[in-house]
Image 1 (cartoon, rainbow, N blue to C red):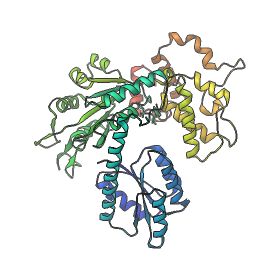
Image 2: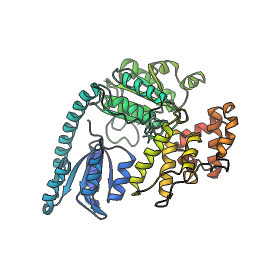
Image 3: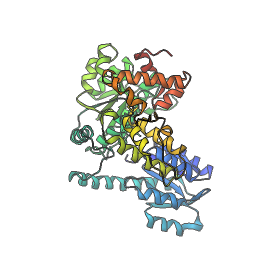
Image 4: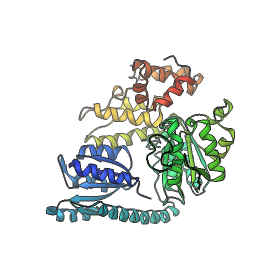
Length: 453
Ligand SMILES: Nc1ncnc2c1ncn2[C@@H]1O[C@H](COP(=O)(O)OP(=O)(O)OP(=O)(O)O)[C@@H](O)[C@H]1O
Ligand SMILES: [Mg+2]
């Protein structure tokens, strides 16, 4: 299944809800919007494969959004939805690049046919892309030209062509998931499924069923038989995000999948066999977890066949500015701002800041500054939440720079977390949001760093 994520944009609630439910039943991940503004937000937040787009929306024409989507090199495919009266405009949308159109009222069978068509076209597009990739012209989504990032990209390109298990390590927000996706997209399995499991977000009890599925009636709430993510990923790739967070019982079961390539569903006794490429990520030092007895050593070695370390942002030199400017452009467009740029002071402040929350922190800070920015005025450091520059032209942070060498990354991270927690009056949920972490990760860090909270 090459089509995974779909957006439905229609102002009629009934149509939106019906499409959403039916597509979800077919295991697509679906987001929906009732107007252009929220559609733009959704599209900026994540990458999607397909958009069902109504022609007429309360805040403008579907064609405006179509044009924006078509301007992107790697954007989703678009299928227009239209009433009988405006079939002509739908046809002209196809000239603008829409893949197809459906006329309202439509049956779900019609929608299924269109999605299948999109999927096979997408597959063809990917195959063609693969041949192009062979001649090494495909551009990378990983932005950066610094030496560590260059090395990272070379490694990703090499490892992608193998089917080896990969363990991606790196601090929060460094881009581990981005690297995983790039590995998948460059691999020989790029036409096969890519399924992600966030091991930190799902509760421990549901995790086993999430991994391996369950039989009907195997526990309260299991009203239907359900396939797990490993089954869905059969023949393709599975991303086990934040692998350090799984319980020891599940670690044992995962080891069996990696070794024997088989498992049983929860409450089932049929052994299911799968062939899946595994990519795992972690922001913890797994070897330390092994030493502490929290992570199985045998599983660690099974996962760590090909380690890829993603460097922290502060080690990427000029990339910091390159990323900041890219995010500035991206978010300015999203929020409809034309003339926005960083002041010289701001550029310096961005360069000297240590970015403990890495690329995600930078992106969040830039987006916040765009929202707060005045039209036609340059962005100053305070809008990014950065230390202002002192009269000598140094930032407060730079003054502290004298101690930087003796301060370890962990110390910097610890004091940053303490600062944010204090700002949020000790509220972990708020602090986690600000830091770009999930609450569970923050809780672990508070424990590890022995922060009083
Ligand atoms: N080199 C890069 N170029 C462009 N965007 C990047 C880069 N690195 C990270 N990003 C962006 O930064 C954000 C965070 O990246 P990602 O989610 O991959 O990080 P992560 O390491 O998985 O974080 P976490 O540990 O918190 O899960 C994403 O929006 C991602 O697209
Ligand atoms: Mg991640």
